[in-house]
Amino acid sequence: MVNGQPVGCYNLPIKENRVTEQGQLLKIWIKSRRREPMDERDRANLKAGQGLEGNADSGGRRQVTLLEIEQWSETMKELGASLDPSQRRANLLVTGIQLHDSTDRILRVGPCRLRIGGETTPCRHLEEAAPGLRQSMQRDWRGGVYAEVLDDGEIAVGDPVSWESQCPSPDDA
Image (cartoon, rainbow, N blue to C red; front, side, top):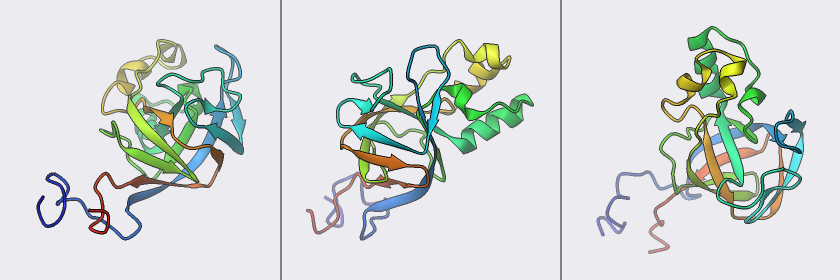
């Protein structure tokens, strides 16, 4: 313990609401069938331990995938391309929050919590969309992350997205 915080936590800003960064949910996509186009939705239900209701991939470790619009935009600029982010086939598109190096962190999307499992490896099909896209997305977590759903609830485009602190507040110690 250092300053009443577990070692490794004393350098992190702990706010009253325990939020360290805030962003927004821009898009929700559901893959109703494998290898089919993603269906864009304004709202969707998350199921703890399963993922997005109606998504072809459910359960397991990759229940939901997330992509940062900032990383996608940087990749498009680098390649001189202008593809829609749905080409990445992630479930959730976020802005204003960095997903880089976020393994085991808890991300709140609207009323639901997601535990980040790790970096998502870009699929081979991305090369068909734009030469060099897959390679470009393999750097700096540009391909996004996958997560486990911890809470049931409805999410909607426009919902706030924020990190929950990994360190307890002094009141929790």
